[in-house]
Image (cartoon, rainbow over the protein chains, first blue to last red):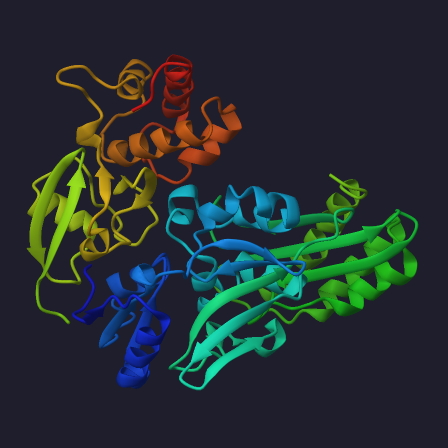
Length: 289
Length: 162
């Protein structure tokens, strides 16, 4: 199992990468952390004419706080996110989700931009992006555009990223310091992609819920914001009955597929169970950290 | 381009240079071009962890990286653990606690455990189990490996680390 032949390019600027993408048309792949693309190459499921390695591009990795957002260069490693004090303070949900991405040796190489651009429906980062209603910055020959998650993820492994565009940055709004959060997922083995995962953020004082954000991984072709379930919490509060009603609603919203790992019915049930668990755990963290 | 490229890197403190196709995996470069066969190659798609090495101090799969990408990097492999004839405390603990049987996963297990102990010098049993879940072992049932990492943590702290 070895990768097929390809032209290898290691540009040092994003513009150079865009020029290369334009030259190869559909026949080039961008290589970020390689934790998904390298297996596809080794299996020869991907046979691009060219590999454009982003690892030598200057300034494409890094974490900074700007205007209430935390901005991640697309090549920021998951490991850097896991141990970042800024992320721990501003985006504890992202830290919790990061620890569920593969294993530490995978996170040493895997990147936030790669994970989101790859758009595996079971991956954690797209669900966090959806729950926080963040945005991604995309650059191409016609300039830069900022895209919301609903306009980015199209279906399995497919986004609205143009073939000559590079995802350069991921922007997540800093979480309210008093909000509670949890990322719950179920997988057969630790480190595997989840059958279903739920990202939850709630704010309020228990009886009253001022804000609820729920998003899925693995429960459909793209991450799904569970808006109707959020509204149940926001109107009925964070008591047991409201949480159970919101979880039941969550299972009705999602439209998972059956595959060899799990049936659609099982994934729907997991959506209910994990939504309930995630909201309950988020509630225990209400009020500051 | 797909013509051979020159790769210069450091393995266990020794500078190496080689030429290979850009598609050559780092693990194959280490084993075939540099002759360092201590690093094992198992599944070749990032699941088994046998090929785990330290790249600039961080554990990573050498089957999910091209050799050309490691240009300029400092790599640490299992061969670098022992000093002369003296085993590294982690290796000693694996021997003492039956942390290996066939030895296939051991290079990856050792490098993964080394990274784990650097990030978290006093891990709980649960944290050790989570950490080593990055590497598959089919012999020992992990119990001896967990015991070995626990024992090594006691010896390595506060002693110097590699």
